[in-house]
Image (cartoon, rainbow, N blue to C red; front, side, top):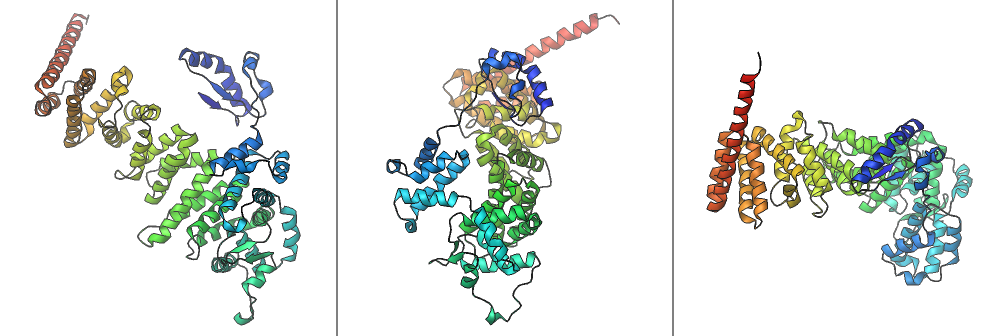
Length: 536
């Protein structure tokens, strides 16, 4: 078990620490292991009995990190030796791991483009230059770019760096409108051309008519400059991004880069509300009005959330927000689709239990079985060797299910326990057999008779198909125990067995029914005698 208490305040840490020793003993008794990430500023407050267990984790070798990222990106790392001086100098500054990952991605991307050439040392030099902080250079340029149209072009070129000139031109006009800044007042034919305007902000269009700044890393520095020095522009920029994600002049790659860059800015200042508003805006578009527009917005919302839930600083807030959304009944289909995708594909990597809980809430609140249910079932049955999530969902559907959601939970239970999906260890284990019995009892109570009959018939057919007599026994035991004293259900089960199994198995089922009824009659008779003998 892993306890991440890195963000715990003093009160929480003291509460946990007072109970930690007993919990540690409990974990050991189950032959398990416990790891605790200590609060960042309270490592000196560790109780003496825990001091022998404390370990300081050093960061990995930074050169090795870069090499591994390059290899993962498909680069033949034999070309990395000897390491270029620019790369060594960058590593000497001890940048955080995410910066090393970003650098490696740049090197791989640049090597994949013909315009960058193939010399590894040159690629490293260019990538490091792009990673270099251009903030002072941007701060020196901005005072000379005073007029609104010029600054709008500067910001647009930075956020749409690499987009075609048509997209930059249209988006610049949109930003002027959102910021309520007047455009050119001169006649149209007297307006300066885009190339002339780009030259004044140290940018240009390349041979493919794509707008780029001449200095690497300059676009990123421009984005950071305006975001940090002009907080009043943040809301207009959010509105603008929400609008231009629909631009037909943008390619899918342009949209992805725009969303990634703007999300990165918001996360840098922990502006979670602005990002949450964008997700709502982009998932409110009904697909019937404009399918292409709706698809673009849904993809943008999914990308934004995927990036945000993985954030070190803000990931917790977004995971909480996803939980709040997942427990709402009135949720648009598009937002439900986006949340299911993010939970299954992103949250599942580092927060598997949290992803399962949110997918379950989404699935049980769907008006009819849909994308959330498919994502949930696919998620828990994806790895037949790892049954933790499967077991967790089974518990939620049976033992901890609430009366409000009994019907959808029962429906999920019947699909999850189809013989093709039901792990054999669940039948061999007494606790999970008890859960299965509880789930089937709920199905007999609340599911449509045709539905549970079809599912029960599949269990009976599975008992006939298996070569393991213990599995057949367990399948019948669960069904009989769940049916209890309901004669109509037991009769239907026996009739199905006579139709679908060999005579020996139908006889086995009949014997189990008779034994269960005899046992219950004996128990009832004993209880009645005790009640009669009790003093009045």
